[in-house]
Image (cartoon, rainbow, N blue to C red; front, side, top):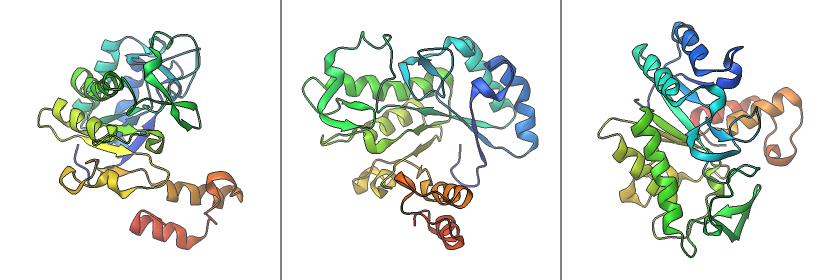
Length: 253
């Protein structure tokens, strides 16, 4: 996937069709091509508790959920999209595990009380016995690229990935994902509320070598313009026309 000129479509398998399966979604892919979509951003598909979810409370990062079909049907979805000239990137969540019993096989080493985020205890990327934790998540990024031929990843809420190591976990994730692509260009995008430009600087400039950041400012201004409400993390936004001009021109406000 090249980074310029893409038209991304965020797709949730569970609601994209009445059936809510990979197989049913495959039948609709020509429609996306027809309207000009060049790259699908697939919302998280890893296993979660319950029978419905947006994917952001996953409990098994390596397991595509049974609710949408089997792993080979997910592979068929990606392959069919490629056959139509559409790239596919996957939304991944590395800042917390979801609620429920299914994640309890993870040892206490996977969590830390040194940092807290909006979901509770943070993932242990820099404390005692964190080496295996870092490998578990960075190899997961490589896994989706290698095993399912995704064209990249969207990293959720990266401001909640706390890491004081010499090499930040996001840099490790980027390096492992690109290595798994074996020379094929991939597309790595991060959601980052403070909009830290270090994420998109190359490795040789002390960056994490991601391709771009999620444009939260445009989204937040749009929400305020539509609803008239600007509390919580919308508090810096007024929904005025100049905000849309600036967000489109500069990325940040």
